[in-house]
Length: 319
Ligand code: ADP
Ligand code: MG
Image (tube, rainbow, N blue to C red):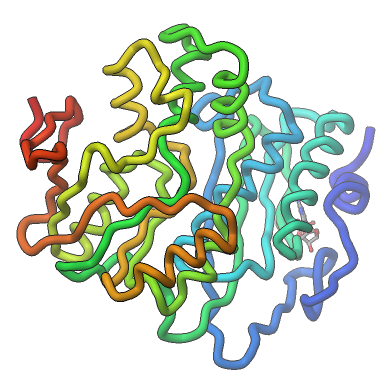
């Protein structure tokens, strides 16, 4: 059977390109560019909690990195390096090869170098740490939203949660809708280029991993502002719009999680610039509301200004 070191050499070692020293020594050595801050983030995926134990390894490799790149994007940081800690129940080389392929394909697309990690035996668990760079002073922090800012959302929320509902038998999706939702759940696309382009345009940002309202709530709390959202302006993917179970669709839209879209606030004067960025990157960007003075609460209104109720706890005016 392959030893730990064989596995590392065979599947997780690539020649260092931008790192001063990559995999193989006690530490990696990296050199951030002058004037840049290092942005560092870790996300862990546990079998049974964050993915099904029989999940496709290639998609898992992709997702483990994608969720981390999404955090860099939400900070306006461009990815540079990553480390990977992985616990494996057994040295199943077919599984490891597919996992590594999914990981490195995404890493290659965003020029992220794997520079180290740890490989152990144990219940399947994956922890990735990413390091990126952002110019000092341009990081998109959660606490920087101001009353009067526009609130924007990339893409659309809810499809990953709808896929999960399908897999749990709560709804039955078919055809293109099922395909789209499963892709969102298993192989999310981090908005890396968008995050970088929002430097100097957006004031604050967060990636939507725990649900639109919950993650917006983090920005509101940190920034000490409230939010008014327009119910009809929330972008709805086809599968959400067509879902026969309206209550489930609304729940996925507002509170689903695993979306990895960027939610950001920006001064109104930046509208045209932001729209241009969206066109340029071919990423739909929706203006969904505004930050307002007051308690850190999000209110949803219909076109006539009437409050729309939502079944979710933690936000005001819910029926
Ligand atoms: P140490 O005992 O010094 O922690 P290890 O034996 O754990 O070193 O790892 C040897 C080298 O392989 C180190 O450079 C480490 O960063 C790297 N490494 C271990 N596992 C992985 C992995 N899954 N992906 C990338 N690099 C890894
Ligand atoms: Mg080690």
